[in-house]
Length: 559
Ligand SMILES: Cc1ncc(C[n+]2csc(CCOP(=O)(O)OP(=O)(O)O)c2C)c(N)n1
Ligand SMILES: [Mg+2]
Image (cartoon, rainbow, N blue to C red; front, side, top):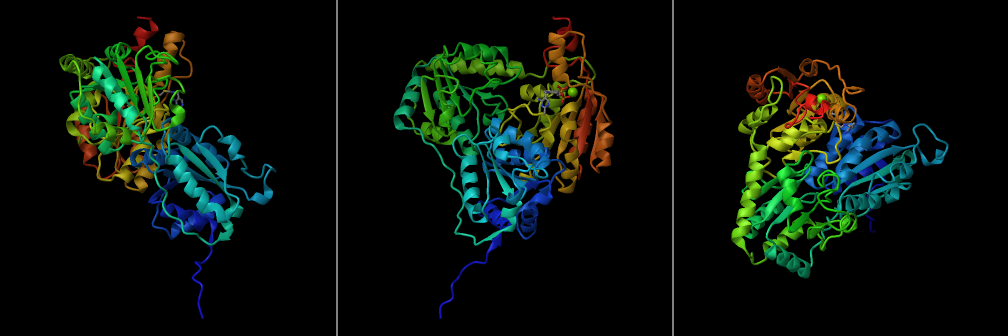
């Protein structure tokens, strides 16, 4: 007698978790909800680590940051209705930052659909333009199919967020698991003809500048592009918040093309005879409100390389468009025999571009108040390992990092190109959980931190011993800056009355320290580095020190 070897049927929650395991997921971020209890229950038996957060915004930002570091989708689990609405901040970051991410959302049972049942949302309409793909799984037998597609969709072409909606009726139904195998990352490769044309354009250019951006990079590709820039004598800049893509101490580094760009670098880009956009979209922030390249036909010769075909020709009509991943493009460039015309001229162009960067990033500036932020960053630079992960959210405080911190390694930056406040703390927690051996420092403004402050409890719970540096100027400084520019002296809705952040950190069980003067920072940093808990350094800065280059009064008085 033969016995049929049929695996036992699993419930929907078990099928979801089994599929995540198959695709190599080791950690999920969640806020629990009664709408997806079978998934939580299946996680109980799984080797997947479940990280319980305090707010779905924090959970989705942690998932997004994990995707950014890892290249595989970060996973976030949230409940229906308010859980999903709270998760939107992280979903939007994943969309704008081209980060692979999968959000699993609970849902009411299918039998009560369309009555606006408790926390019912039509996610296809609600998330329609905020994700790469959103689908509701109405049959337990199709869970594996949908999850497989979610992994492929989130990671292919231009990566981004995918939302899968899990009705209670699907999670409680059962099905027999199939022969699911892990998803396969899809790469796009440049054609030989295009690579040769790119090489020819680089050969004959007198002032080529490459601007690195986007996602789908890895450590090897970052090394290869560095070697390529050396051999071919190319100046290299990094796009807004993609500074980890090129070693800032390298002789070919020209600076970051972001908010508060070095005017000299902007000039260089405007007058370059070849711009190579590699990996990024060159959207509003790096393009300086679309002024560095005219739309759709730039004045400068342009090569645009992007893994998503739909991004090529979307804004800029390039002379050469190549639909390829940064990794495959640099691998192809690596094989080319070097051919550079007018190398002496190129050498001096590269040297001048780097000299411009060094002058711009020198911390020898003086700003109002008792804390000099450029010196604070210099102290960090002198003390932290150079592969430390630096995170931030949105606010003028981030300009100190962008301008003065010298990023040196791939995977050392977690910062939202979407300009989302509150990102620094959850991103740092995710970074530390992902790479526990690395030093992780979260920067936040007083406004920024208070958007996700409660995640200090998550850091405590999982011993994610990060250092949080809060730059407290008593206001939503960025908006005050714009306000003073457009409506001088009419302060409206931008003042903040803040708590004692150090005391607050201590109440969570973390270390809390306060810095009022530059000379106190070093001791606070040393103490934080030796802490056996997360540590928060509350730096009180002058509201006048609004940017590295100007003061609030100067803006108000239109100087
Ligand atoms: C979630 C979110 N809400 C609002 C904004 C608009 N915004 C941009 S910067 C900023 C102020 C940031 O204040 P703070 O963190 O204190 O930094 P500062 O500019 O004072 O250095 C605001 C409100 C935003 N970018 N993101
Ligand atoms: Mg502030």
